[in-house]
Length: 143
Image 1 (cartoon, rainbow, N blue to C red):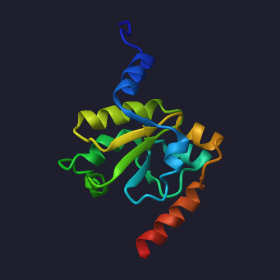
Image 2: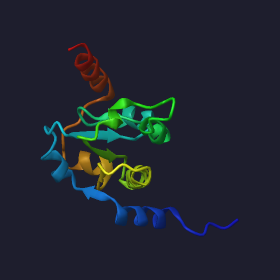
Image 3: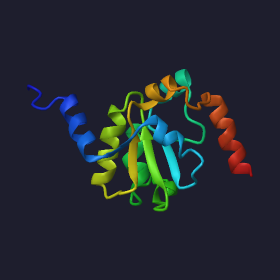
Image 4: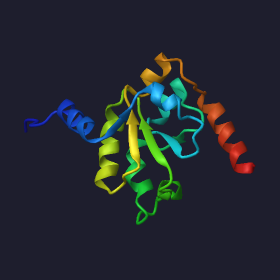
């Protein structure tokens, strides 16, 4: 069975339909309590490369289930309509597709980062190891 629409066409369609921020734009908003960064990369990428301080780790394969209140895997953080959820992946492709999917589910407060974590690291934007992120998360929960 031949592929009639490749991944690049899907990504291009998504990019045309979603809000895309540059790393610089997101860095300016890091301290904004109304912004929640969402890292949708897989755990192997997180272990290898780290993540952004304060990012919510939401693996791409579970995202729709974590967002939907009818799902047994629902995460209440995604119900906070006062926040803008800014997704990122490795290069910006998965996050564009994921952002489009969340919009198709009805979310209007979602965007993604152009170039993903690769662009983030290249810009020398703040990052932490996965272990540091886990320690930060644990201290936030105990505070």
